[in-house]
Image 1: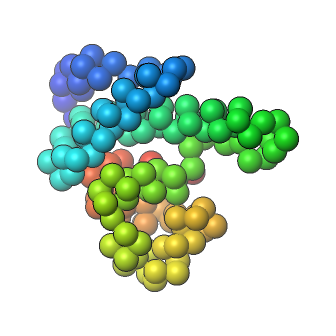
Image 2 (image 1 turned 135 degrees about the vertical axis):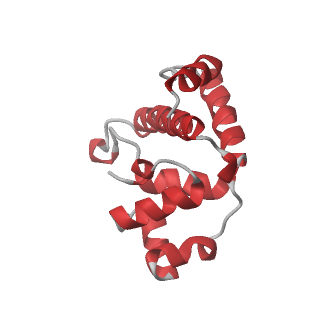
Length: 141
């Protein structure tokens, strides 16, 4: 990875912890524009995208935790769930369950993963990383 180019990219994107709806919207736009490039992403852009997605998910998890309150503390997540990252990537690429089912073996297994009922294996995370041109760690707990 070209550290200089990565630094320039981070200066352009200006990723930071999200604390306002406006910043959330801005980083969503950044993530979507990067994801639209698909296979054309550079290594530096893939790393930046992974960072932005984690920031977005951390903010959304925090907001949902506040909205759903302290009534259900076990539902609150400190780390964004891999199946949520997968759902967002699928949405941004206009993909359906059948488009990625082969990565998981069967449509039933893919559905369980998307619902968060089944974990994503390391091999599946690696395949998803290749498919979406993002770091596999987005799909691992």
